[in-house]
Image (cartoon, rainbow, N blue to C red):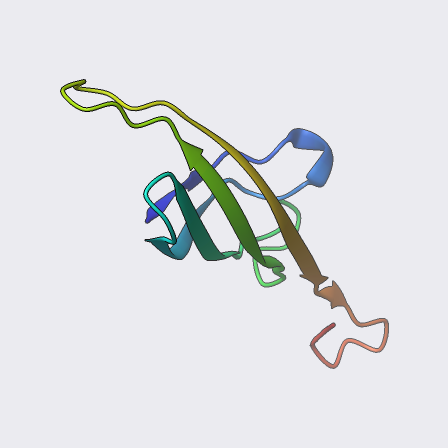
Length: 99
């Protein structure tokens, strides 16, 4: 999926699009397992040449409450995830962006 992330003003980055890639599979009639990768790369407000990148991975387990003949099926979900960020900053010696 894809979307748009509205950054909070304390981060000093521009709002940015994001992308995710997820796959899921039922492992039994009432349980499913989903995995997802995500990525976004907003620029800094003060210097558009510098980026603050964020990416991550998550794994979710869902318990589905499926009932025959019902048009909707609720579920509960629990999961674990990991997010990492990388920030570019201006080099003091002005040789270009550094990480």
